[in-house]
Every structure is written in structure tokens, then in C-alpha cells.
Length: 58
Image (cartoon, rainbow, N blue to C red; front, top):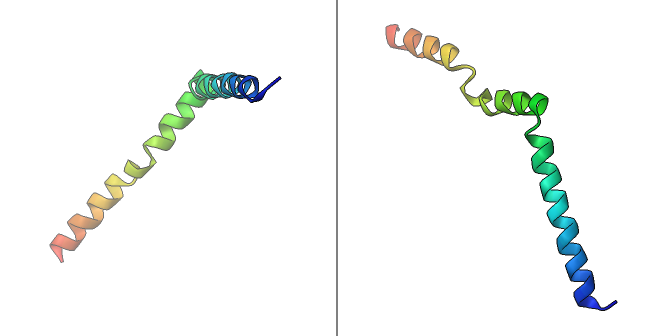
């Protein structure tokens, strides 16, 4: 077994790990959680808008 065999196995293992992570991330229960997390920066838009309206009135 030389260095090229080790590199080939390493490439194969890393590809399988990547595919495993993608499958894990896109399963139905996790996808919902990740979608919610992706929208967190926009969660307080209504609070931000209320604050901006209050500042404009003052």
C-alpha cells in the first residue's frame, strides 16, 4: 500500500462523509429546523418596524 492508495481511500471516505452530511441536513425534521434558523434574522421585523414608527413620531 503506497501513498496513492491512501489518497484514494481518503478521497472516497471524505466523499461519503460529505454525502452523509447532505443527507442528514435535508431529512424532513432537520430541514424544518434549519429553515426556521435561516429566517431568524428576519424574526423581529415587526418589532423593528414598530420602533422605527415610534421614533418617527417623536
